[in-house]
View 1 (cartoon, chains in turn red, blue):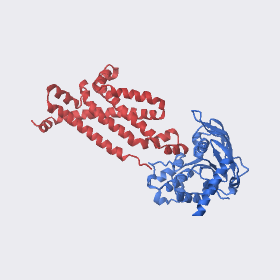
View 2 (cartoon, chains in turn red, green):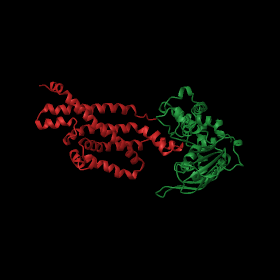
View 3 (cartoon, chains in turn cyan, purple):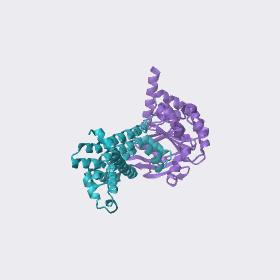
View 4 (tube, chains in turn green, blue):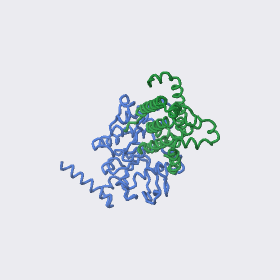
Length: 212
Length: 266
């Protein structure tokens, strides 16, 4: 049986796995953006918070993914369901690039623009929402892009704790020494990563500010 | 030597000064003093030029006036009220601010850049639109041509015109200008200086302008304050300035004469 035939015969399961994968990564990214962007702003605005916040995100990043899933297992609400636990772990991984790029984007806003905004009488909040965030948008998107690609890869390991997704095929294939099964997980995961990278890359270029 | 942004009739001697600095000092957290005991007052409608080399404390003085920096000691009164008693945002919207680097918002069209303060002040949309068109004509930019462009599509001189229009948008009675023509090539600079010297809208305003160009100071100032190493070393009318004996001031005059000699030889 060729790989193509295998894919055609199992397209339902593969599609199912892909959708689960997208769901895990999608929810994790929503959480990571929701938490990471405000933290990035905080890091940029309150430099004394940068060490603890970036340090924390850095540590999360260095824990091997399989171990992180294990660490989160005893956490009360999270440990109860494999998908919750997987999403929490993935969001933790996605955090660092988002925080770092958000803060870099804001700190990188031209000082003359910032001075003019203050001098015109804009409040801190107005400067953040009308000047700093719009001007850092493409840098923030670049962080989200890196985080998404990273998370799509790591999400395959979530199958080890029974959270589903494309990792199911990979783990089953490894156990059964079946290359086609491994590829049934690996190829869609790679395509997902490439697709996300491409689309977010387009958005990033679209919003890249022109330097005046 | 008259004819700064101002004719002398616009300067009122009787009213309380628009800006008054009393022993204003500014110190960095590391203890370095950028400005020491600056005392001066700017009359309503007057153009005061602060002249000095980089690091003389000129820009620091401006930033203390609109509270971009907080005083370490002393006091600054704007229209008789201490800057500390003003809401800092209301204070800054009451004072136009033009800087050398201009600082236009690159993601805003020229229209939105100019209408920044009116929008912050919640002007009705049609009043804002009329005002923007009026200002663009004033600074010599055709609205129909430039309204919807972005800053990066303009030349340096055009951008500074927008910068000045933006500062004038809500018709603030006071204007702070930090090397407004400093980044322009000599020809464009001369053009803008002459044009803005004639602007009706500027004549009524109280202006503090910072520069390191003697010629600009003489052209635009009713009075010239010379600063050196964080302190004011003298304050003169243009005529007094040219006759001053104080060493820093005299150095500026010598420099001016040298340029005139160079000009005469060519």
